[in-house]
Length: 61
Image (cartoon, rainbow, N blue to C red; front, side, top):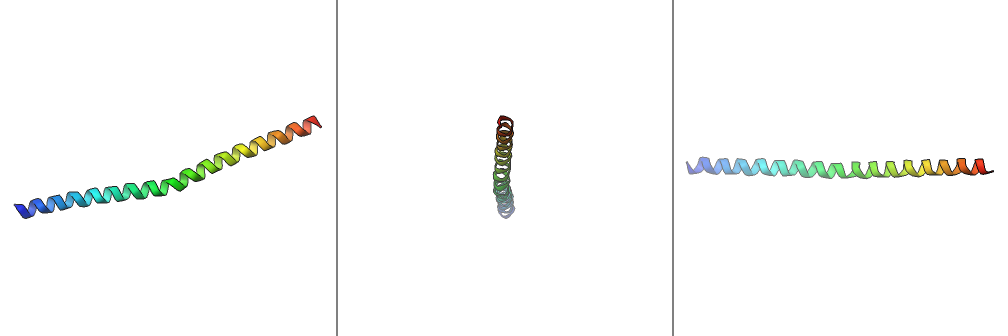
């Protein structure tokens, strides 16, 4: 009985550890994607602003 209970507890701990590990890896892999998306969006916004400024300047001239 005691040995089987110990095995169950070990299995629970292993499952919990695996879950936490997968969660941690997922978050770590997701951070660079988030950074990439934010950089992409900001660069696109800056490009569109620059294009608008250029258009305005050409119209002004």
